[in-house]
Length: 261
Image (cartoon, rainbow, N blue to C red; front, top):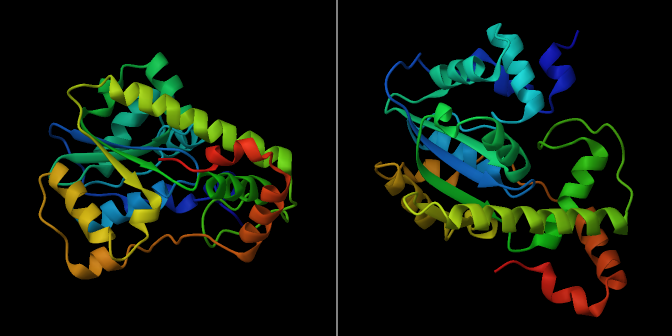
């Protein structure tokens, strides 16, 4: 019989006590993975988790996830729930990490004081230069319900030009919102992380070094840098087929908008 978490979450493992760390009671330093859907943020979170004692950075502000965290901890409000999440997912160095898409972060900060997440010290802003590839990946995941590599498909994908266009525009808008918000955080260090660089074995060590320096940490072992996988990059020939179909339909004047700088 499926558990509540298996029925309601594409990634039920995140709620497991197996991912908990020893209960932490001290002051918390927080880093945020600022992201958009299908940007590689899940992979980055696991890389940072495996690189050292930097907490377990997952999607804690996702509204559906918060309800499941309430179920796990027996809480009824957001703030005490997040306090329990922080207590169980903060590393022994006092670093707590989380990732959030703009459409999760923006309503949260309107409703709550973000200081309840701890002392925000650093932001890793992950994005994809190939935003068309990101929009195609998002469209496929939304149709199939397969948001995490290895999860079962609930339906088969069907090419939909309008859906790709809509998701492309939404992703570009979320990147713009992140850029505007983060540019105003003058005392908050922001490191931009391109997905394409993160998955490049020749560039990944440099990126990891930069991120870990922001967390006052030494470089991890080469094995940790070279093997970022507990999650895997999703790709298939269908993505290439959809790209060709989309490019055949999109007006020429829109072509410059298919890449991010």
